[in-house]
Amino acid sequence: MGKLITWAQARPAQWALLGALVACYPLSVFLPPAWGREAGILESLQVLVLLSGFLLAMVVFVRLRPERTAMLALWAAPVWLLLAGRELSWGRAWRAVPGFDAAGRALPPEPLWFQPLVWPVAALLIGWLVYSAWHYRIDEVVRVAFVRSAPWLLLLVALGAAAGSTCAEGHMSCHLDLVASRAQVFEEMVELLAYIALCCLQAVVLTHRVPALQSRRKPPVDARVKELR
Image (cartoon, rainbow, N blue to C red; front, side):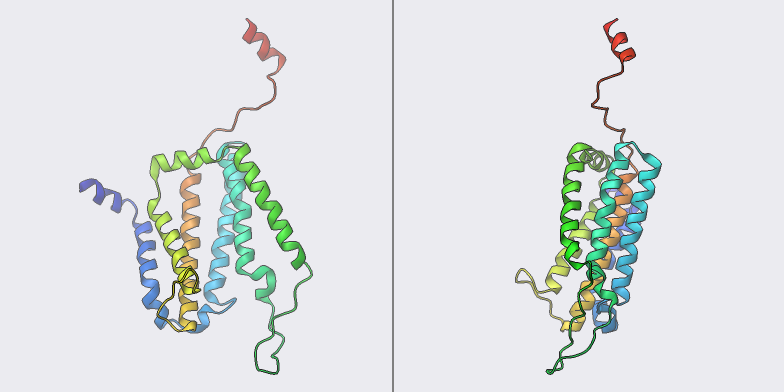
């Protein structure tokens, strides 16, 4: 019991995130519905958190390269950008809706010139992520971090927020007892907490430094001579 209390006291910020996740449902009833709209205050905060995760990853990469921890940071950087692009609908969130049709429905904005390039570029990035994860064995950095200080609460918040967002969207036969505008506010709130949890999870993992992989090239001549001796 004493170990459990000590463990809880050592992670107040993580428990605060879990408490905020639980509070999202009642808060969604009182917050203004405008907060849940496209490019609203909650979505703008999400993008800010995602860009902060990207900047943190790049700072770690510059400071720790060529350690494997740095390669994990470089691996994470494009993931943050992909998530930010998704939240901004790849730029369309900044464009005003041009008008309404005869039935009074809002017309979608015209596609941006780079829209056809979004998914091919995303596919290339994902391919590079898969290759680099294998080549640099960045899974070892995550394994070492979880052995030393497993951030299970952060994972719980991220997974719980993902489940809440899925329910708010009405997927997987899961629905919330909220009107559409309130469900959208709830969705944006839990997504914001999910991104904060992921950003904190990245910070926890990147604090554990793991040396770089040994070079696969042949050792220099002097080193081979010493081995022969």
